[in-house]
Length: 309
Ligand code: FO1
Image (cartoon, rainbow, N blue to C red; front, side):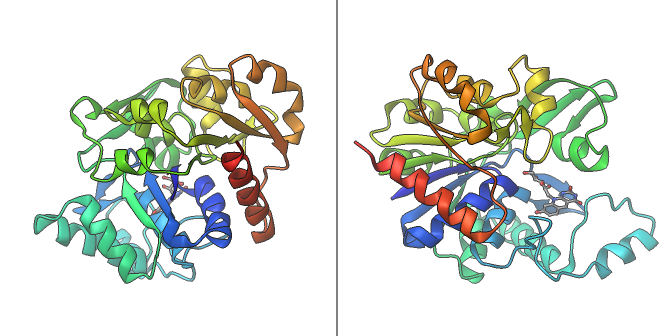
């Protein structure tokens, strides 16, 4: 079994490659739920949906989120009624949120709802939300405290970030299967996701970091930072706010207590000796994933490094 820790868009590119090189049934993905929000009375789990739609072959590849070819009639009508429609929920996407909300109102957990949705969409890999307890990534800014999605989408990453915290994490337990997936994995992959608001919340769930430290499997991370900049999103702003160097080295430092191998971009080879001083092996390659070929090539390399003895 291959177990991956994942956020949304960046992670899904690598996951798309992984399911081309291993039997999709051999892949378990532990997904961040710190981005989850309630809108229009619906429970929305952006990263879980991005991973699910990607592995179902249904994601809008250009945006990296939502269903491809979705329409926005419902949202346009909500806007007409005077609602704030800053979060772009497509019509098909809304069906997922309605279904999930109804399942959870009927007493199912987020894990159970996720399993039903991914099965209905034809996903063969296992998608595990990090927790069934509510954890929300909150960003402290010069314009007040807001959820990560508000910071990212509503405020377009403009407010100055002062701190990040995960509301509810103290009481959150890992979802069923999460710790087992780390214990039983042959290789553990930390996807190229934001280390603060995508991988960070997963690592903060009680028992997860310990399970990674104890894991038998080799743990391979792909750096989401290339040449001092994130491929997409606000990782640089959030890392800087936490006093972490914005580089593959900074990411390696955040994972130093459990990471075996860091895959960095060729542009960052000069960081190799510093990362190696953390006791982490380094492999350098082109880590930008534009085409399906890029995704497959990187996935192959991740597995090769993870399976080396
Ligand atoms: N990202 C945006 O930048 N703008 C949006 O309006 C938006 C809507 C959206 C709807 C459903 C969904 O599953 C994801 C959506 N995303 C949107 C992407 C997403 O919120 C972020 O990229 C991830 O949460 C970061 O991992």
